[in-house]
Amino acid sequence: MWVGYSFFILLIAAILYRNSRQKSRSVNVFKQALIKLEATQSQLIAQKSALNKAKNSKSVFWRT
Image (cartoon, rainbow, N blue to C red; front, side, top):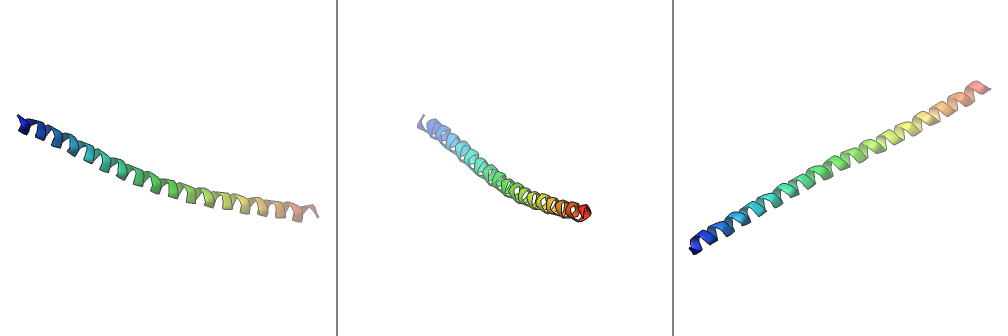
């Protein structure tokens, strides 16, 4: 009888361990994607700023 209970406990422990590892992997993938998105956002903000500066300098140049 105790063999059945032991097997059941080991099965539950194995499932919980597997789920924990899967969650850890998912969190790591999410963090990597977030880092890439933040880098892309920074690049886009820098490009937008550069374009606005270029646009403003062109408009100043053409006004004179």
